Amino acid sequence: MPLVLLALLACRSSAVPGPRPDVLLVVWETTRADHLSAYGYPLRTSPTLEALAREGVLFEHHSSAAPWTLPSVTSIFTGLDPSAHGVREFEDVLPAKAETLAERMQAQGYHTAALAVNSIFEADRGLEQGFDHYFGQGDVSGPQLLQELQTWLDTRPTDKPFFLYLHLFEPHCPYDPPDIYQGVFSPRPEALRSGRSYSRDQWEKIFGCFQLPAPGRPGEPVLDIDPYLSAYDAELHYADHLTGLMLQAFASRGLLDDSLVLLLGDHGEEFLEHGDHGHGRSLYQEALHVPLIVRPPGGPGRRAELAGRRVPTPTSSLDVTATVLAATGLTVDLHGVDLAPAWEGTALPASWDDRPIFASTDHEAHLRSVRRGRWKLVVEVGPPAEQPERAVRAPMLFDLEEDPGERLNVAERHPATVAALSGLLRSHESEALNWGKAIGRERRSLDAQTEEALKRLGYLD
Image 1 (cartoon, rainbow, N blue to C red):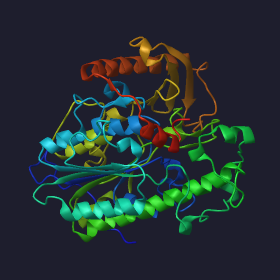
Image 2: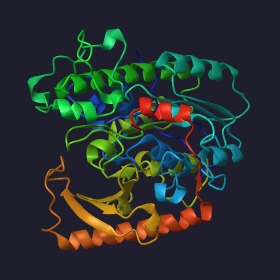
Image 3: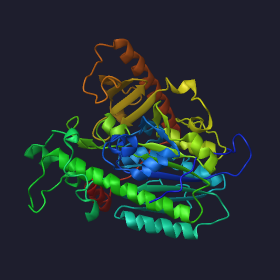
Image 4: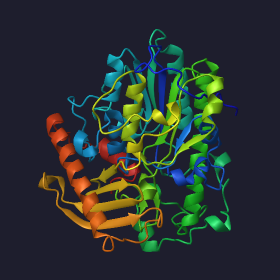
């Protein structure tokens, strides 16, 4: 499907007075960057994203702030690290004192809307703060979400610019795309075969959502990882198709030309690269490295200037919040930076080169990571009850240039690097926890319906 794709932001209100852009923030659930053809994957999983990247800016090393949806999305909504906003576990609720991106946009005169598929978006988590229109459900298909989008587009107020958060669920387990996509990437080319497989015992211990049953043989498992990878790739391809339809819905109404479009993943997915399947419990790159493609608003003459620009310096999902706010003229003290220099200038800020990128999880493990340049440190910390000490244990240091698959822990070889990165982590965690004290932390008990939804998603036994 041909897409109307745009280029450069002609004038930002923070620099030159002018109209503020509409903002479309699209998030794909459970999306690894390295399985997208837009990021060089050999299979054609993402033609829509390829087209988007040709007339926008693709960030090559973009990282999620957390390896599962609830803390990751809350970080996007607030621009804060999970230790600062406090939403780290299922029982956590975003406090009213935490000012969200939607609330800030609303205060700027924007009509704010969220259309999101995942049970974590259902009521009473605090994620709805600041949205004039909020649709958050778990059991909704991609076509149903498209219909919700078309209804919103036709009924939204037209006297205000809009900020729309759109969250597609498709790549999440179960890996069960529509029939037309089934088998589209099977059998896998020899070069893409993993050589990994489950034992029967391993398969029985993973959450049911991630299990793949043998076709036509009830109760028999698929133990080879390659069919999982093929089904996952098909889900990505389907999400790409849906995204094309959604962008076309904007284009057909004349709304795409003036919109700032940002598309990213909320976290990745593991397929036994380091012994686990799923997400949430580790901070390896397969769980953190997600896409980010930005297409600023502007005329056709500026599209050629971008010409598929790619940014090699690492960035964080926290930068998305700062970038959206800056496009409306707001500069707020958050944990991210405005990424607009990537498409507004001829050179990136020198400060980006050495900038540390942080991530964390408190789901079945308490882990923190920091990436600076080629080096990435992952450490285990004490549980939240030990605040503020959070004692660092078991450091793992990876050289992502020499070892992108994170196979070799070189912490003992580079003690000075470990010490420097550990210092950055301690300082960042301390700052985040102090911020969190000011916001407060709210928790709730999980009811039976919520527990069942989380079991279906593979988060609870």
